[in-house]
Length: 402
Image (cartoon, rainbow, N blue to C red; front, side, top):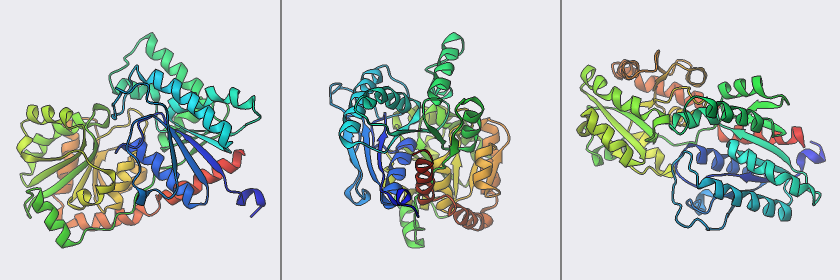
């Protein structure tokens, strides 16, 4: 190992989000940072003024620095655009510049398109002080398609404008790391500078629940011993497929009355009217909120897991890996990312419809005797997708452009 390869790196992560909240992007930020610290590097995260502190026992030495609380009324923790974020992002540009000027990082690791634009805006001011960190763009999907999926953007000239802006931002980084194969493929076809790699999410290692703990947990939530439990964990928002999932529930119940669904996540007020409209509220256990650090017990109650997100945004599915690590077969849509993760460890819906998703769920529930066997295979397969592997891939990426 050369002296340069052995050198401890300083990594400033730019996170334009209320870090930490119990959702996918935040989990990626946290676990990437933890993996880098375990490899001996120093990590500082610049983020918004709101968000939970990382529990001491889960923080190996990550520094979190927040912008000033000028927008003290802003409390939004959910994903999605908001015009007030313009002000927050301007404050985050200033914070990024201030931290980088004094700390002099080797790498600025910017999360999502918004974070890349913020870091890029700070770069000219840093160069005035002789500070030239490399800029790594960490992208989890299409910015434009995500805005469309949140119903903040439709067709026409405005969508064309945002797509052009997205392509411009994707060229800003010295290198791009994408969280999914599909996203990396798309960015590679558009980026003029090259330098696109795939750095996948990992799975938090969750020891299996003992039979006693599993029985106690199911009993606490009123779940019978003969029920087949299908679990969904994640945000109760449109672009995660929650509407499709809820519409699939009555179809699945008609095919298999022994099914019991556990939906764990937030915000509850978006899920409740959907369940009432579908007429299935009494057949569904809702756990909200779901702390990330309590994920093991919820997944441990399940027999099947569900990933209802389609490939509209090109995003990867961190929850898929966590389902696999928990030893659960997965019902999901037939996308490139899902196939590469699962291989034959699940049931794939051919069409992006509630009916097709319900068929995939029921196909697994009818193989109840085989579910433990499929789950064990998934757990073994998930070992190849660890956060330590993610940290190693990031370190190689950093050193390739330093």
